[in-house]
Image (cartoon, rainbow, N blue to C red; front, top):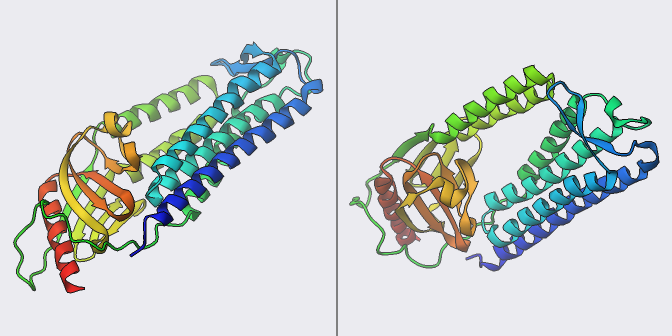
Length: 328
């Protein structure tokens, strides 16, 4: 059996690396911005109105503290969450990718906004922010996705103990086969996403900042992938797969310690809806409140998915895990 030292080491390494990378990105952006001080107006433009013209101003130092200082706090926060709650590969991927995305996005927005003011005597003469936003969106999203995709998954961690006896079971004959399939989708998160997309499109039309349409298109893709899942329990274990094919997660039978039914409160436990990381590093595919299938697995990891008839899914998973243990 793989011991718990590997996941602990992995989450510390990933959390530290993501934090350092994020802080380095912000520090480089600050250094570049400060090197431009002699060519920038004082104060610099820091906010643009609905007509795409500057309407808010700060000193360069105050602007850097406000944007990059906030970014540093966020990077430290996501790095800490990854280090503390990164038992599962999915948690580490989400935490590290988010830390990198936050740092790159804020750094590129800051530098893009300042670059458009180089050589100006008055920051009110600066043009729109659309180009800087487009660069920031694309330039931060692609590396963040690569970080999430390229981080290695968890090594096999088969259990060396039987499945918890208090978990529910279903009666199965020794050679009888059974499969359980459930669907979960929609919910409040999808409604909120649709409203966000409409707001972004409206703002893009009113302000002329067409880069917001890129954000709206990305949100459409995210919500298409994150708000419809198929849940399957069979002789290979548990599989949770998005209707788009990705993301997905699998729990092999030999890593199942106990499956049970829990009451899920998305906002309280996971901060929202979708594919989330909750308290203690629990991975959640939570699209509504109510019954959820909780699977506790080796390595201090667990996954919960909100799905109807979760009790049957839990009972079958425990039963199949029992059978797999007995066959070894």
